[in-house]
Length: 140
Image (cartoon, rainbow, N blue to C red; front, side, top):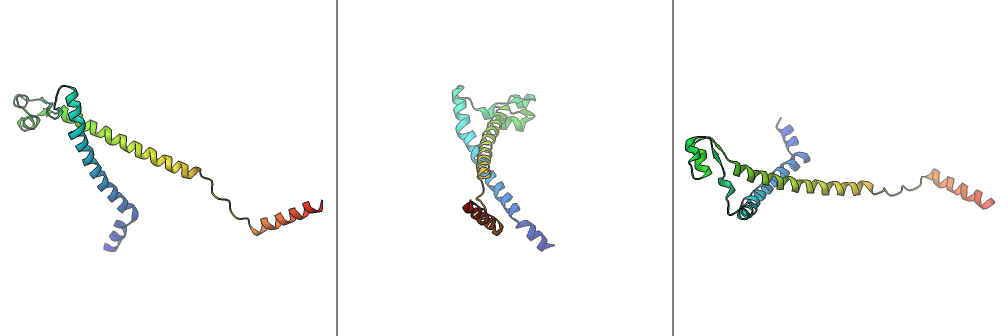
């Protein structure tokens, strides 16, 4: 059973999937940082220095009086729409990049598929028929 598992785990597809998941996680961290540290501060500055991470509605009295989103979450039920906005921007960036990657791959595969295969060398039968044809042309 251990040998069977080893054979399964070391198959090309499983290893490729594992590499893809690891790269995807790293890419997710990069996009999180891009959104949280670059894009959202710029958007916040455009809208008057707002910090989207602290936009929330407290659903309890204690949560609505909290000064920050983290404090409000500890105090009770809270709707954190600023966090949601940040995650939505994250998703849009990741989806756009993946769209561009898939589009590029499709274009690449389409070009490979459209390239005609090289002509096959003639068979012996075709060579003989060509010789016969040439001989008949030479007679006339």
